[in-house]
Length: 281
Image (cartoon, one colour):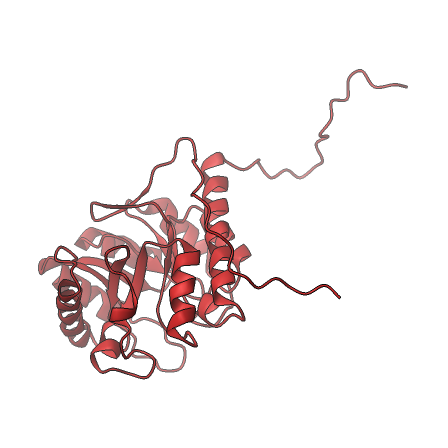
């Protein structure tokens, strides 16, 4: 009986895509377009292996949970090599704009303590809804305006609302991060039409965040024209997180290559692959 090989796939170099350029956020360049998180892993070892397999260069960390040493977060900051990984502190657990601003300031100090003196990045989350975990658009905009004034590079997590996305861009956010579906749900991309509008109109990177459950859904988001993805639960809660992280890396790269290469138009009728001239009658 043949058994499934669950060894960790070796990371391959990113594909060289003609006409493409690296991801740039707030003047900082990244070769990987896949961001990952640190929550929901069964162990630090699985998290560390997954980060390596994903090839990611940005990892998000919940400031509040690290500060309070919440279960699963004791020693988390020390478990990652921050000389190789760019920290994206996040304001997870904040229900108001005021709370998010306070936690963002703590996140900036945490990044400095870990050696990233010039790190002003913050993933902004304002989520008062405990059941569906949907972000508060008004609180998010209020917090974003304040944090931009304080010199933060703000990456706001939002519903797939094109008008809010444009407004956040106008106040100075460096990305927008629309959800594909509710966080941790694995429902995939339920807001495709609105995400497409956000991508079309945005002059800053669009990072699809939350709800993606499979690598095929990740590829779809990239094919739509997203600049990057943030995947956590789909990796951390899989049966083999390191292998799944590798799958998401490949899917992200494949989707990006497809988007840059340009798909064929959709037609209402068939079109033969082989020429019809010179056929034998």
